[in-house]
Length: 228
Image (cartoon, rainbow, N blue to C red; front, side, top):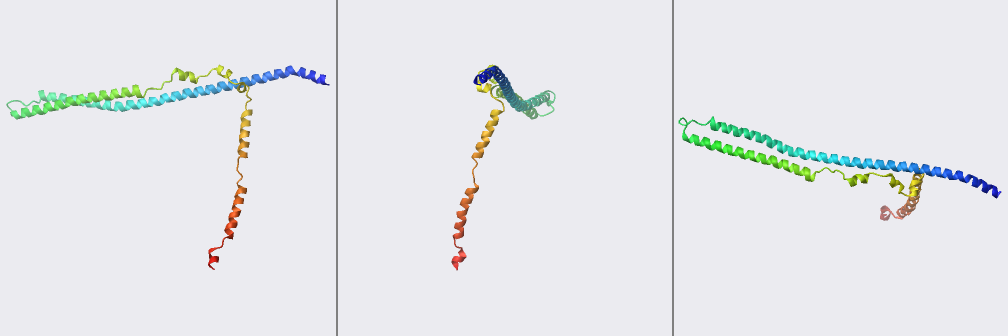
């Protein structure tokens, strides 16, 4: 009888080996696909975060451009107006000059003094407007080039987000042959049993503490009784 069972066991042994090899191969392929899927999701999440960071800094750069463009555009308008005023003063010097012999001399001096002062102030305004426009533009360029640069990821960050299939092969054998669903369900069951075992029993303790308090209050005499 023992020889019969031994022969049957030796006969079934190759089939069991093939079955175990097939199960191990299926588990290995499943876990490898799961590993590659997780790494792909991680890579997409990392690249998406980097892209959103670049978009955020692009918004910052647009805000800097808008702020500097406001000053530059206003100074450009002032420059055009002041140049027109200088041209009007030149026309007054040539076409609107008081004629000698008809108007008194003091009016000539007063006209020349006021016209020269106006030209001086207009030229000073043009110079200050040009200086303000150049200063605002240069400050905006400085902000864009030194403080609000685009956070373009380098090679190290790009390579760090990528994954290789050899990383799965370098892992533990237990992870390669992990049985799906089983381990997670066992962990959930263990956590549920632990939480159930740690729940405090409050009903008996509350009754036990409430009864002595009630007896103590009942044994105390009332104020009316003591007065009588």
